[in-house]
Length: 197
Image 1 (cartoon, rainbow, N blue to C red):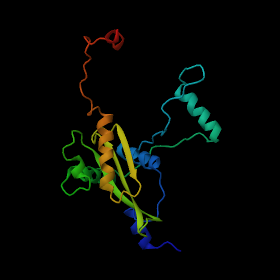
Image 2: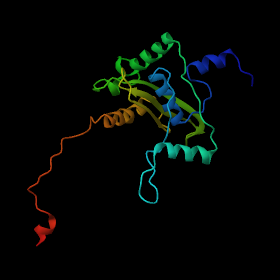
Image 3: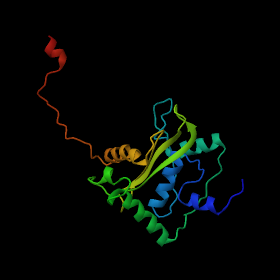
Image 4: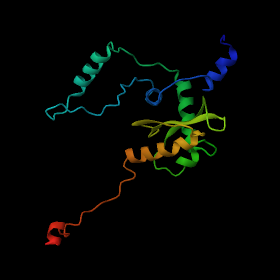
């Protein structure tokens, strides 16, 4: 089927056939949030060798690239038109901070300003009633003015992107320590071995 103007318009608003992973979307969101600087994405926090020592990050990356036969990445900064980027980022802020924003209800009393975008992605799969399954998506970054974290949540058959914003909010809150309670240890308690004797 040939590509036409209608396909371009649909793609411009995310309504064309797309196939992205959550990791790709997290990288994309991070690049937008930081103004175009590429980020090195990994899902590996650390590797401990047989001797119990943590391997240096550069050694891990070298081994991964060798095993996967990945050539050295010489990517450069992505250049965005500043006005266009500002419009996109302000739109993402509006999603979470303005009445009517698709994630406003989730973030309206949140202590950190977040930029985000909700989405629903219809699939070719159908449920038991023959209805196409729609996945819920949320992409975002925080804090809005000085981003530290980019996040993507996809809920299979979640129907509405607003639903994916809820766990994203909880993850952001955990990342920034907003869920921490002050825990004090009672040093007067006796160990259970003493209680039993």
